[in-house]
Image (cartoon, rainbow, N blue to C red):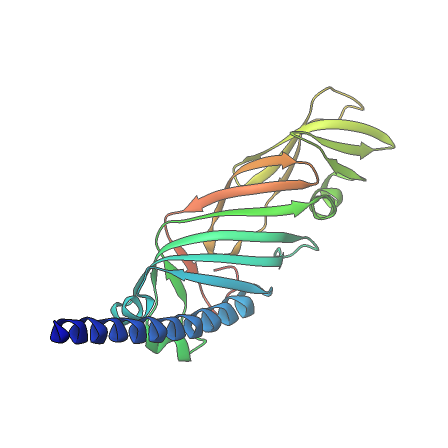
Amino acid sequence: MRGAIAFLTTVAVLLGLGAVADAAVTRRAEQQVSEQVSAEIGAPATVDLQGWPVSLRLLTGVVPRVDLVAADVPLEDTDAELSELRATLTDVRLRLADLSSADVPIEAGPTSFEADLDAGDVERLLGPVAAIGEIELLDGLARLTVAGFPIEGTVGVEGGAIVVRPTAPILNLGEVTVPLPALPGGVSVQQAVVLPGVLRLSGATPTFHLDPADPTG
């Protein structure tokens, strides 16, 4: 009986030590990857590595899932930025040896994301193209100010561009189409939903690649 208790105690201690060691490796890996992503996208980012034990996953070279959150992500060649970017990467190729180098690209399999643009950043995207003034984001609609007149319109995504269509014709204003800048990792925007104060973009990509030499992947 005492032998069995001693054995179980030893196993429990070893499991505890293993969990502590795995947690330490996970924290280090998350910090390193967060710093690398932050540098590459030009915005503060945090990552959460999933798939216990993460240390074993790093040894095999594939982490099943990585959750990424970034704030104030600049959009290429514009004055606009994403107020928040949330992405879930799967089958992320990452090894312990890679953590010591900032030159290793981040590569993953299927990746989904959501990104938020506040009203000010939507104005910065649309305004220069369509001479649109103030924009108010309502529930399902956007209210635009054109020549001092408020115009309500729907917002969608077609062919990699934001498309605004007035709900009623006024001032001969047709639909407004503005190409979306490239997003980090090669993700493709497939949907836009207007929420109060926020334009939420979402989409996916079968492969994700973030090259240190090119922040837009």
